Image (cartoon, rainbow, N blue to C red; front, side, top):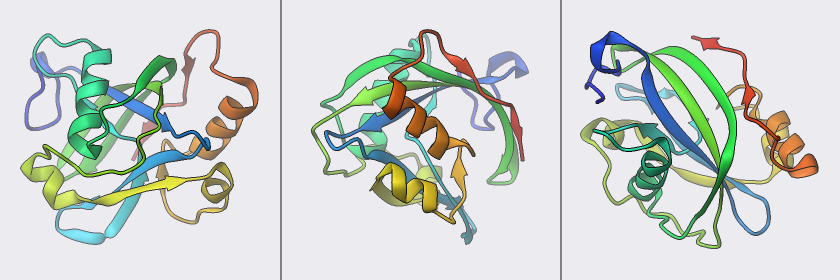
Length: 170
């Protein structure tokens, strides 16, 4: 079970499921986040979040996607990447073990349906990005090599086994 401070029960890594959601034009959906008290400290990231109760990572991925974007028509594919990260957010340090699932959808309209109070204060919207736009972006995007990872995914398809990405400590 997840605690409010971003640490998994027992003080370990927070288990997180994220979705690399692609539309029929191979655009990826990213959320625009920022520090709750400083909208100028911003970045883009994939939908997803921590596991709740005894749900699986797949269940968490589907639930988080629906809550954060309103998208419920999704074909969830394999785990593409795994990453450990640690970052300051909302006055706390978050230590996470993230699994990134491939998702496909034809539903491109977004409208959050169940944001937490913290998410309401720190998520400024969503945007579909082409691979080219992502490659040329000057904004901060997590994971940091997402443009190259997306290009490889689109060129080669999903990896035979999940790739372990470099740990990111911010």
